[in-house]
Image (cartoon, rainbow, N blue to C red; front, side, top):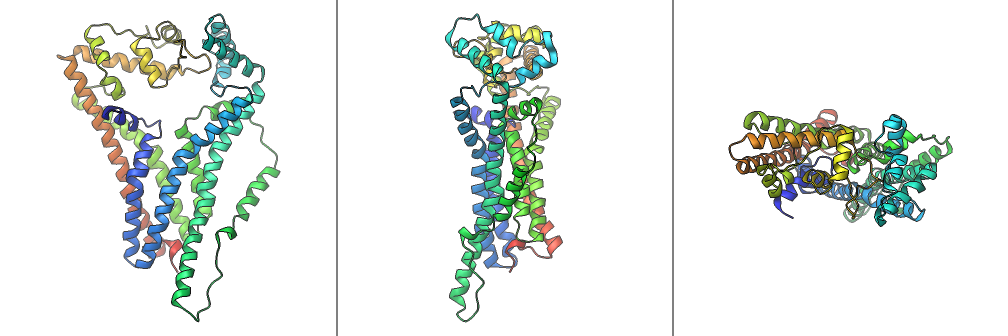
Length: 437
């Protein structure tokens, strides 16, 4: 993988890659170091406990947070396939026909009729998948609903309700062992074993919820949750994690500090980077006169640059649904269609035919087409297209790295520092509230 590929991946705020870099490589080590330094101001013993707890918490939580949802979804997809359905079918195809009726240019019924006469095996297989879901919509929706809840609840429960008590129990156990060695005649507190964790309250809450009337999920709800990106589900999971961390806190002060930290982390992880990226790209356009809204993999593509020089770039006539569908269906080998597929805006089967099971977001594809055209026009108006493209690639890569740097600083340094100032304000001490004796 080239440097451009890596920068492209970490610059995609719709994927988990920026979170992976920030969370594991920058944020976790910094938070552990800050936790140790802040607690060392008052107690070396508590600083050691804080360092151990923070290390376990940061890295185990990151592993579950980043890998839990994809892992559960992978298992769920295998289960759905065993039930005879293709997990690739997008429920928005039902919604599209309900909303637009005869004017719809995609949908379950529309796609079946459009692709059924194409006598290619993978196309016919896809059509049969559509027919199976069309005839069993309720059963398929039920499976997707279960998949969504499993993918969000299981990782959240482990991170928010199971891991913290286990971490706290380890601290109590180590402290009790140390106390036994140092004090012979002092009465020790009852030992807390890992098997005796007080998880009953959480279990009762879950059981209580099951006893209540089950909500009726509508097709719109199922369609919405089934089409959430992994990063959207991670944001939901992060919200559940916040609830779990606050509810499992060892005292009221620790609950306040955890709420402050988790809410700040959610904002800086899922909201701030998007606005930083937009701001940096707008600044580049004003300062350098370069539109850098395209992915660096496109800007650095030699075939793309040569096609601009030779005036051989083909684009849809407009960003209307009719023109976009006509283009991506008749010209799958065009650079526009290939880049759209690479960025997961369009999906093609191995035969080169568009996958009828996938939903095409026309608004998103239209915006991509417009940005594509803007860059081409800017490059043509420049004195040297090659130099213009290299400059655009360099600026875009700098913007991505700057975004990672700024957002990482906010998450790894600014937020933890503010957390301990908040801690000092409400408790009068820098020590972690849950570790104070």
